[in-house]
Image (cartoon, rainbow, N blue to C red; front, side, top):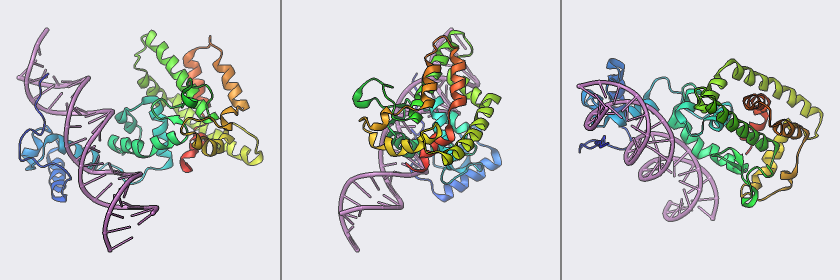
Length: 277
DNA sequence: AACCGATCCAACCGCGTTTCA
DNA sequence: ATGAAACGCGGTTGGATCGGT
């Protein structure tokens, strides 16, 4: 389909916006709404293309935008949602009130991606890197990464199953709905409670527990970024054994498994590497 | 103080999707 | 039903800033 470039006309300004231009755009939209973006610049008296105006408004000038650094909670949420939704920045942004997709995309590309790499996790698949190019998931470097991989695997199974059953199967949306549903709500709540409980249990015992794996992630996984194996990669705790046994139960309903993993996922602890890595 | 590489982020670009005549 | 126009999204770029030497 042939289409004309949006900034075909010569004389249209590009590059950074001047404060005066911002003011004109804001004033115009406040008075008239944006209407047709294509015709807005002409009506507002701006030497910009409509696309540029739309971008400036949605990413910067909109009054309901929260600016400034992301909180740890927001970063955790972005990572979790990215695991579910992939690079669907708009969908992810919809779960973070007052943050823009562009901002989240930048956050991901500049910070979070690198942190996952640092942990030895592939930021695209959210799976641990295979050691020296070996098969994926052969030996996850930590309970945290292993758990993520289990979750991803179950997610894909459930996705396939839902597709089969024609249950409105764009599964990322299914999981998004799940995330937003009462189930998701209780999941988040449960994890908060769980992590609180774990924190206290960690203070009581230094043995390897589901929650105690955090230090292993931050200390052991980072040198593993290139995919080389470390002693940590052999460490399997009781929790993982439990996961293994539930996961190996092939006849189990996949979406139930996914839900169980969702409910099991110790977010608040395993994501706390964000504070250190 | 000057240079240089790394990092960050606002803005641009291209393409798929939706809308409408 | 068709195709052009408009919109919206994700990937990428380039200039500003920062930190190290």
